[in-house]
Length: 261
Ligand code: NDP
Image (cartoon, rainbow, N blue to C red; front, side, top):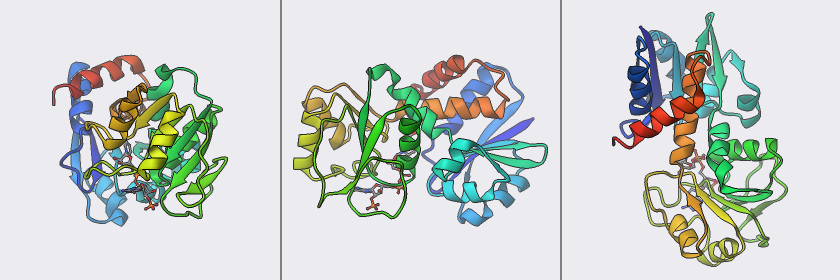
């Protein structure tokens, strides 16, 4: 039996076991996908090996530890600087980042996007920025604090020096609204950027965040992070099983599974 798991802390809420086990069962594979509550990121590789896993997903706050634990990194993982998917191949630990492509798949049906503003400057912003840049979308970043990191953006703003523009897409990649009712930037700024935008995307899923509510109030087409989650999961699944399944079928199976909860 091939064993897989998701590592994180906290991990009880993770939808990944449900999504992966549903696809495993439907495809009648001899495999199982569990969850591991990790205390320290440095223990990730030892735990992966002790559990004799064939592959794993890694979530908050261990994506940088996963990056450091790998022998071989995909181009995306290298550029983004974080890993959310681990695969063991011939004794070597390979690291991938499927958040980036997962995000881009989720925004494809919005329509044409040439410019974007990402709110936040953490790991998710790096993945989303990588995906936008690779697909020819110019983007700026607005974060509450200054950062010393090259995100590949056109301009990096904090609230103090922000100048609003006409962005096609506004992305919330902060944790604002996840466990509270906060907007990801001051209300005046949010109102201004959404008034001039065409689409809004929130990486947070399963919740009507204040950001999504504000975008809906402006009649913008909106999406939360559920499709991003499903797409990153399906892409990881295909990496676990050497790409032998149709990605669209895995996406459809995982979408069905996500509605079971
Ligand atoms: P990080 O902790 O790496 O970064 C968080 C960023 O958000 C930082 O830039 C931080 O600012 C900013 N921030 C946090 N709280 C607030 C606030 N109240 N107001 C304004 N800015 C704030 O987090 P991640 O990048 O890992 O995750 C970001 C979000 O993306 C999370 O909500 C997570 O759930 C979601 N996510 C969704 C995925 C999906 O598949 N749908 C996949 C991965 C993540 P500062 O730099 O000043 O601290």
